[in-house]
Amino acid sequence: MITIRNLRQLLLLGLGVIFWPSIAAHSAIVLTVKQDGNDVVVIGSGSANTTSLQNPPGSPEPRYDYTNVFFYNQILVGVDASLDINSQPVDVNLWSGIIGPSSFGIDTFLSAYPSSATGDLFGIVSDNGMGQSLLVLPLNYDYMSGDILNGTSRFSDFTLADFGLSPGVFTWNWGMGANADSFELRIEPVPTPAPLPLAGLPIAWKMAKRLRRASRDSTAKATS
Image (cartoon, rainbow, N blue to C red; front, side, top):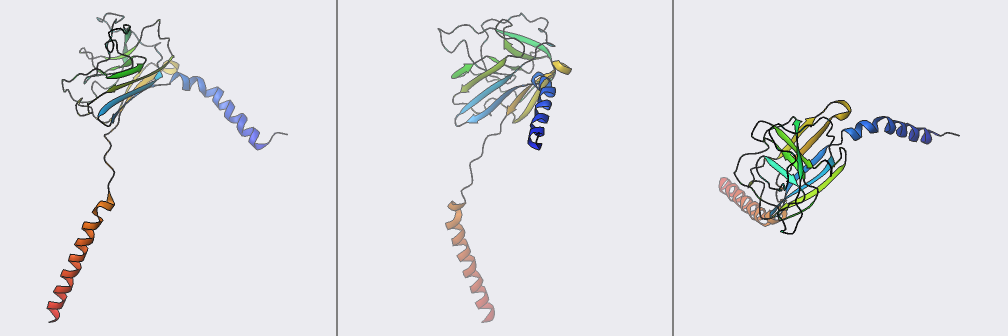
């Protein structure tokens, strides 16, 4: 006997089978940048459908020994070839054909290398100097379209303000239909310290006593 619960499970399974290819095709890359104490941390994950992308004209491809440097129009996450003299070179492909903002902050002319980094090297260049936004991904033979990416980077003794970053969500899109995909950059606002209401209670109590005393004095003078 088929129960209502069984029917619901079958319905959810059917919807998953129908819509999963579309959901999988639109699995975006998300990079989150936030202040963590005295450091700036970048965390990235997701996958990219590269079917509709191409290499930018006039740019040598692939790019060898690419370095994870953080500045006003480029945010990357993951391993850095310059972190250790014994580390292996990091090679990437730059992909054009993406549409999105040309900036995510102000130009502070400050660049920095991560103090620590792990995972895949990938990210975004909002403007390559020729009006193009570029997606940075591992080389073709290292990265196949749709592969999952994960990476982290930590920049010690820096703030979001040092890099001129504007809090908000910035999105780049490319492709159509089943090949549509996106890159999302989330810059979280700097957390504000939690208020300490108890710290102000003694002061408020003293002020209340003074106001009450002043009120009594004025009343006494008015009736005398």
